[in-house]
Image 1: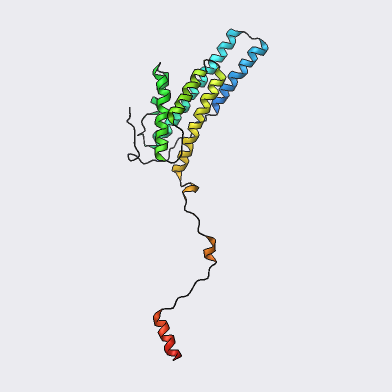
Image 2 (image 1 turned 90 degrees about the vertical axis):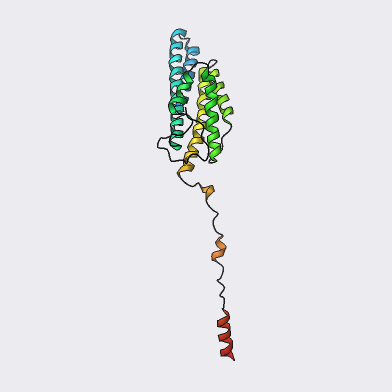
Length: 207
């Protein structure tokens, strides 16, 4: 396990990996919702419906772990593999019983601390993000569609902040450029100045 990195320890480099397609997760949530509606309208067999819902729920969970893996892969590429957690650790620790309830709050805290410390983007407290992710996971036990939509919604926020950070790493953003010069300075006449030697020569000629 890596130790926490600080601002002075590492210079960032542009990552090669692209951000995860978090929006795909909403398709899982939508499919879950559609089957729930069909179950009510068509009065389908509950056993068969439960099997479909479980497949969608597991599929959505696996895809979410893939998104977490990709997010941390980008962080490791940014820091030349000196980030606190490897992609495998970040995703894999979510499947450890009981520990995963702590981990889902821990890694967002580290991520937000890193991004805010660099100062390229501003992101809310990682403990708030982690609490919302934990709430989304628990909400899946009540309604899978709403829980997954909430889960991927929070993850999309994290991914968008990381994407903005990477964009800032790639080059200077417009707000970092110096202000443009006042165009009026180009319209002012250039005042000529005369040296003392020239003044003496002109006065002697006039005399």
